[in-house]
Image 1 (cartoon, rainbow, N blue to C red):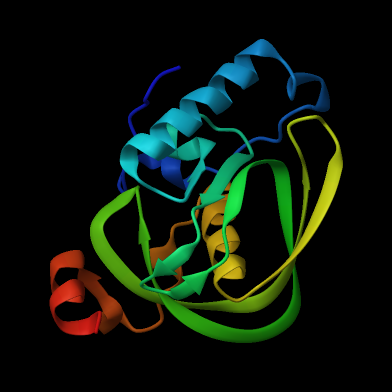
Image 2: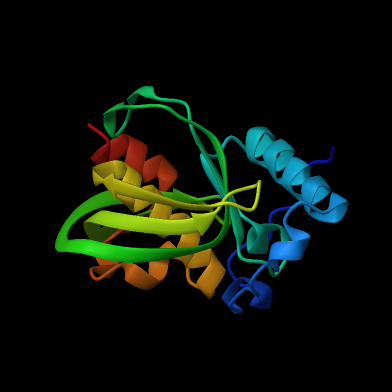
Length: 177
């Protein structure tokens, strides 16, 4: 459909909690077009997840697509493109682990964030059906990162050590060994 502009840190709308998507709107043409735009935008920008607020649409809607294979996080299992309406996260085990996170709305930076590594996500899919996923490790981090956008939060809000917020160039040179 169309590649949309991703709004960046500092834009006030990134800090506003998104509104739930009504069940009657999930299969509507405007929402289908929005999802198509989100997919085009995600692919164009080269991300693995995108929340509607990142393209200045204040809805509780996110998409995630993980290509899988080797990455800077190790070997990752693929996840096909999945649409999440009105997701909620339940922490099943509060034990945390940290990853260097990046974000399309915070370009050029990486930050070390520790998050719970065992969660359950309850959501409505693109057919209007209630679904649940149990996620661990890297996937748990990805989902929490994306769904934070729906609550007006960015990964930088979770950084506990400010010395672990770095430019990507320095990350690649000094930390990504």
